[in-house]
Image (cartoon, rainbow over all chains, first blue to last red; front, side):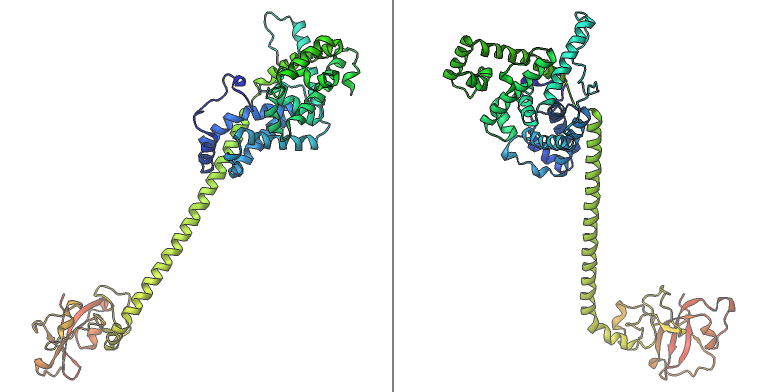
Length: 211
Length: 236
């Protein structure tokens, strides 16, 4: 789910030489340390995806917990021959996200600042005046709101390709659909997103993006 | 490339690896000639910058530490429970196996031992004790031979089972003749070691301390041909 360039400094990179499937086998035998390593290796990507899709840190937290509980309860569900553990976890997270969004279709994304590191985005530095900071903050809020208002399938394409910076092939694989579908969803998602952002900016809407 | 094709493919032509070089070049050419599509591309790039800022905003996002704590706690609970359950199952199977083994060994011993024990049991007319010190099998009959199967009879070569039984001394010394006993030929007499309560000596005409009447003691009886005790000896 995350490329090497996206590795966050300070994120756990313990025992990366140990393969996930080896760790998972150890965890299945009761090795808590192995399970913890797996969790630390994959929790951030899973959480980010859930957060960007739901726009709600509580829901994202619940989804991450659910995903790893599934792995703990039935580690045999993961078949190493069928792909990486990250992709498997992404699939489980995606299902949970979809269920969550079905349950709460009209949930309004919250503007929050929590211990997960999200919500403030911009740190007030010496170079930023409070006015600039407030303006950027408002822009971020608008983008976040625009993303959250996209239909789920378009939102997924935008999150995967634009926020997670996956290639079209990777995104298609993750979403379980052909690459053409991803391209089409991304195109529609972008159009809607631009329209929403232009509305937020007060720019007159173009006819081309209204389709 | 038409405007529609450009919107579908050309907006992100540089990034889309599935496009051929020709398609990419056509997209660039179209953007250069069509002002509407060029504006659309600019707009998308501006949106891309904002999306980038949003991505950066959430790039540091991690699940809170409490999620890890909860998961680890659940992991511990789950695996400790499994471990305890596994141990209990193993213990139960081990106990069952041990019970079967003990039963099998007992049955084999019983099958082996029963033909030999039968005659011995028949020989021991009075109730018996298994060992000299064992008072658990004490009997109502105050006079009992010390060893059941190997009742100590020493008459001629009758001490064949001496290695298994408690053997009375073959010496006739130390015997006290019972009052009223008719002395017969000592060659026909037998020495029998028995355990009896001290009070039973009174029945044989000997003086007994009443306070110790219930005490179990071993005595050697000199039994005559007629089966009646003639003399008694306290070996201890």
